[in-house]
Image (cartoon, rainbow, N blue to C red; front, side):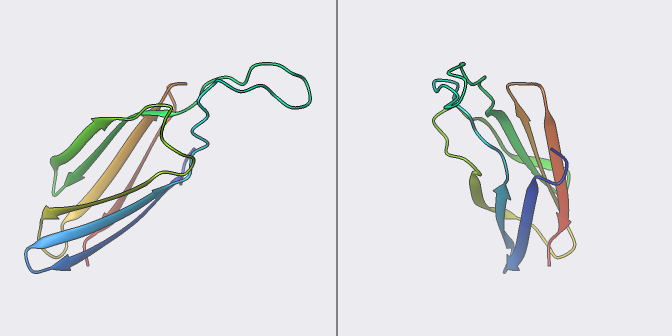
Length: 103
C-alpha cells in the first residue's frame, strides 16, 4: 500500500508535534461478504513505529479493534530539519513507510 501514510510535523520550541493519517482497511476478519457470504480475511496493522532523527520514539502493536484509517499523533524532542519516519506492517505481511522533514 505505497503512499498510505500522510505525515505532518511542526516544531514548537524543542518538541515536534507529529500527526499521521494511515489509509488502511483495518478489517478484523469477523464479518462476511454481503454478496457471497464468504468470510472476509483479516487485514489489520499489527506493528507500527516512528523514528525522529533516526531514534525510535514510538514502537507498538495494534489489533483488529482499531478503526479503519487510523490516526496517530505524538510529540517528541526534535529540531528543525530532523526527519520523521513512520512505518507499519499488517497481518498479510504488507508494509509501508513515509518520511517528512520537521518544519
